[in-house]
Length: 163
Image (cartoon, rainbow, N blue to C red; front, side, top):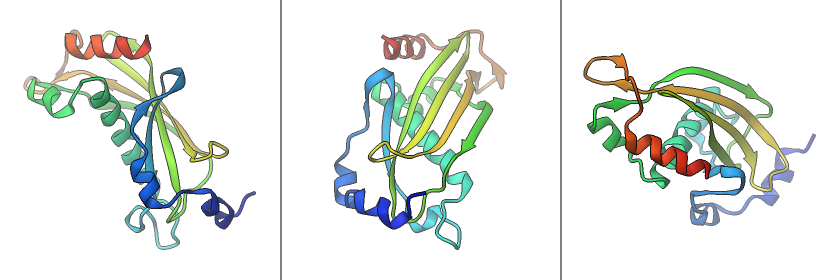
């Protein structure tokens, strides 16, 4: 097992991470770089398990924005996309000061259900920290009920992401 100090030697400084762009990459993956800060960790400097879920959501919202769907606009249209199913496999802990890439993509879209896949990897892609799947369902915010169909703009944008 590689020691954290070995990993840190390979990680670019924060200023370099900040210059990484959020972008769609090969195989329709969207990549979202993160850096572990003290508030992401427990007292031992290990990333708290809920932080990974926050990063997954940040990556998903950023991915949607990259294809023209601003989540705030979606909410203003009366549509919400709550998580209805979540599966996460923690493979290896991230530690304070380390950097990683949160990769996400849609893998299934049926009716108003959208399934997202995730991997959190080291910057050099040699370590997988987490894999996961999240299922979202479109809900009418006013009625609190599942919508009959996705808003056309959302569906069209997600379809383009697969092309």
